[in-house]
Every structure is written in C-alpha cells, then in structure tokens.
Image (cartoon, rainbow, N blue to C red; front, top):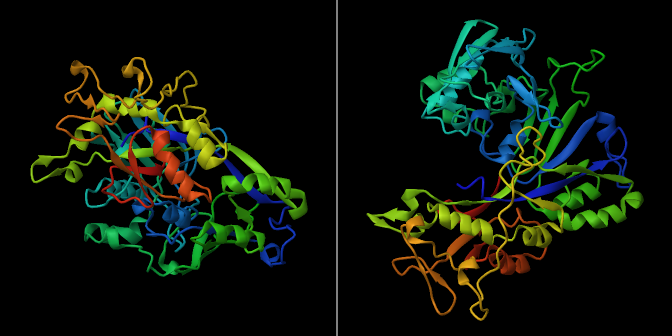
Length: 467
C-alpha cells in the first residue's frame, strides 16, 4: 500500500449541527429527543463485530467507539496525547521504558475493577498471530513487540528495544476485560467472541455509554454509563446526554431525508449539499459548522500482494509496476488532485502533500512540496516526450523493466504488457449525484488508462479508500 505518495485528497469536513442546547431545534416535525436527552445519528452499514480488537471497518468502530477506552486519548484540537485510563506516566532508561499509572476508580460494566492485568491481556491478544488486527503493526519496534509487565494492580511497565517516538500515539488502543475474554483467547475462540450476534448485555465495557439494544439493519441504542470515571470541571457526571441512538441507513439520500424529517439530530452533508444548506440555514433554523481539514486522508492503495499477481509461478507484469519506485513516482506526478477535489468534492478539499494531514499540528511538515502535476501524453504535441507522464520509460539504471511508447500513445511496460490497470472505487467515497460523469473523468484525472469498477474487491489492482 502506498501511503506517503498515495494520499490524494484531504477533505474539508463540514458538520451540520443543530442549533440550540437540545440539539434538535430545527423547523422539522417534533420529536422527544430533547425530553429524553438522547442524541440520534445515522451510520451507513451494520457493524461487523463488537470486539474492539478486531475492528477494521468504520461501522464497527462507530458501534464500539463509546464502549471502550485506551490508556491515553488524543485531543482532537491540539492533537496531543492526554490521560485516559492511565492518569499519568513517565519515561526512563533513555526513553526506552515507559511506566503507566492506572486510575483506581474505573470499573467494568459488570462491577469488576480495571487493573493492569487487563492491559497486559489486551496487548497479548494484539500480538497473538491468531488474532487479525490493525494494532500490532504500530506496536512493533524494529520488528519486535513491546514487552509489557504488571508489577502491581495499577502499574503497567512497557519496555522497548529503543526509544520509540510514536508510542503515545500508538498506545490509545481500546483496553478489553481479561476476566471476560481471556478464556476465548486461550482456547483459540477469541475471533468468534463478541460478534454482532452477542446480546448487548453481555458486552463488558467501561466507556461513557453501554450498548442496550442492537437491531440489525435498523439501529443501535446506547445508554449512559452511570459508573463512568470522567467528571466535568465542576465534578458533575459525564456524559451529559442520557443516551444515543445510531440509525442504520445505507442510502446517503435517506440519511439526508431523515435529518430533514427530524429523525436524526446531526448530519454530515455531502459536498453537493453544503451550498444549498448554507443558503437555507436561516429558513431551516440550522447551523452549519466547518470543523476544518480532516485529520485523515483519501488515497489509492495499490495491490502489492504476491498471491494476487503470482499464479502458478507466472508473474503478472503489474506486480513489477506496483513495486517499482519510479512507476509509483510517475503516478504521483500524474494524479490531478485539484481536479478530483473540484469534480468530486465541489472544491471542499485541499490536496494532500503526504499521508499526514495539515490538521495534525505535531507531525505535519509544512515545508514538503507536492509532486508537480504533469500533463498526459499527447502524440500530436511536439516536445520532449520524457516530460509527459504517460511516457513512463525510465532510464535503464533506474528500472529493471524499461518500456516503450506505441504509436497510439499507450505505454507498454516490458514483456509486451499494455500499461493499464483496474481502479476499484467505492462511489460513496467520491460523493456526488453525477456518478456517470465521475466515472468517465476520473481515469483522465489519473492520467493513465484505468478501468473503473463501481465496487472494489480485495483482488483489484488499485482501490480508492480512506485512512
């Protein structure tokens, strides 16, 4: 997967927030949301799991996001780490050892106290090769796992082979209860534990909310956790809301209509809806608030899996393309980021220079320069064809498979293979109602022959995705 040069668009997110403290004072049909102090939102699909360690999709993350917490949390404004389940920590041994001190007033929803045993168990599950998860990679230093110890019930010590600067940004993974899940891990059943068929009452959590009800294809209902450890500045209980409801609405148009009908209280408008909503904000008694550039990014991930490209000992030429740094650089020059922003996001975006968003004030480098946009090859235009991206022929010492340009202006990359690839694209990623026009123009924006597929599959050559 290409990250540094594969990022295409940073989206300027716009959140449609309801005016007023109750969160639903819009000129729409009345509801009881303010009376019950329940916030209604929507999500596009059903979750795939309720096990936070196994979460790899946004729907599952949204479903369990308020049920579990990590040792630290990220402040969304400052992007700095702040205390979570760990109230403090200190570094030692040349920054190779970090000691976390857990809060002593945190309880799981079944009344069992949170202890260091839970942290040690969670990391054991993450590192277990039988457990597929996205956390183990960010918790590996020089190819080695972080060693974790529990000298007492409320102290966790982590030892690394060297100082690891991103540690506090990697350690926010959700802690899970050892007393509830340890048997499943030891018996090899962890991956089947806490699936979406699990009764919500059997989910042992410690976040601000508890799951009360899940109806597939309809909704997920949450109630406030009365034992939640966090308090406001006056010592009052948090969260202030008594509950939340996530309506499962796959169709974006239906999500918009449900908001306008008062069934939901917040809505993330699609780019083509923003300007109209701004013009009618006063009439609808709503507030549209821009929350700035997204902390993530949109990118194209190229499939580099040998199992996809090497079949019965025969190597597909595309495998060499997508592992050739010169080819990837050429594509980075070819991508028309601003064109994608204008076409798909109505101008509500900024081009990505790297896989780090400018919203990340700590790690973003403002001095990075973007890849210069070069025009597609024009066989009728005179000049040096080496300056045209479609002629991707590199000098022999720079690539193992120099190519040639045919008279039709289509590049052939060694072994007589025509340079073209399938670009799997989920249409809900690139918002807009004019899907046919987007599918027609996007290959041109990439600058190469690319066949658009409405939905990606894991065997595709390239997939439009989101960080």
